Amino acid sequence: MPRLLLRSPQFKFVEIPISGVNSCTCEIKINSVVEYLLVKNTKKGTTQNFDISELCRDYLEISYQSSYQPQKITIQVTLRNYADFNGTGTLRSTKAYATDNGFMGYGYFEDGTNPFTANGQYFISKNPDLNLVQLYYPNNTTGIVAQTMSSSEQTVSFGANATTIGGNYSSNIKRIDCTKYGDGRRIVFINKYGAQQDLFFFLKETKTLTRKNENYKTNILTYPSTNNPATYSISDAPNKTFNTTAKQNFTLSSGYYPQGANNFFEELLLSEHVWIERPNKATGNDEVVPVKVKKSSLQFKTSVNDRLIEYTIDFEEAFDYINNVR
Image (cartoon, rainbow, N blue to C red; front, side, top):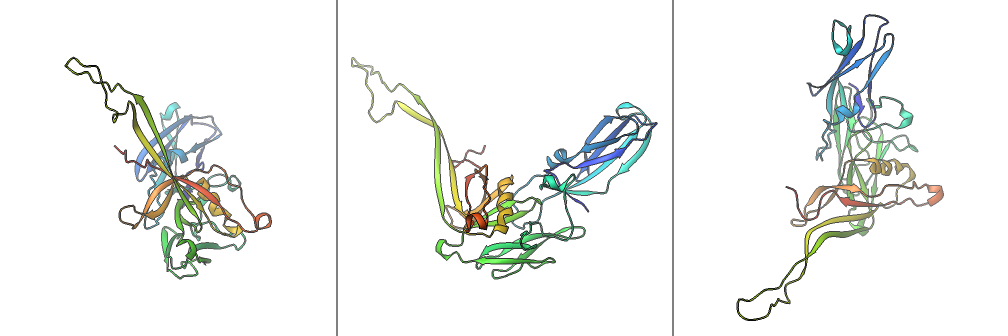
């Protein structure tokens, strides 16, 4: 079953015979429900293409999953040719595509049209220098990775001291000793394949709080009923503050990674869904909250130019610090 990457265009096409057809329709079922019916008037002896990616992507709602199971929708596309204009008249032919799965992933320009995730791989980019998936985790830390099967997706869990992911494909895990700064900070993001992936920032972390508010000036005079002048209290401020909001920001240092891990930082920058794992303020237990990557550009580092490869990235909480969800 094809796994379509819906952040890039996905074309479905139908051939128009040289006679007897003047229009075609594209019916799109998402999760077995007809959501769209597109109609095109056409020329004879041509091929009509329909880009379904943006329409289908609207129905793929992404949220953090502790199971790391890739989130998807099912897509069924049926194209029909009609004798008359605007999808009317005699039905001349029908082309029904096999059911697809849609994921919040993307392809590169070099991948060409209709990018997809093939069978027989993890949902993680390979280290190009090793031609295998290499992950970087702190000591004594477990993890979960998704992999493709012939007709489904599965997750593979690995233990706190594992040196390979397991599952069906070649991989290794490099353990990082980060005792100087604790266990590092786990960032979770939706990668180019549409699956959750962990990326640890092992070194320094700084946190800032930025406030915004509005001000107005008010009259604090009081007028007594007796024969006395107007007065005011010096503890009452004439310049008032209201609508105070705040954002919390984090600056994280990655620690030293090999050049082959540059793909991970690239996909983090391009991701539209990112979370950070941090202690809860009240309980101290770990919680996962959404954040945004504030950095809009990334200069890739290489072992030749930089020797030690370390990235510093700014994150902003994807919500206001003062709860205002209504």
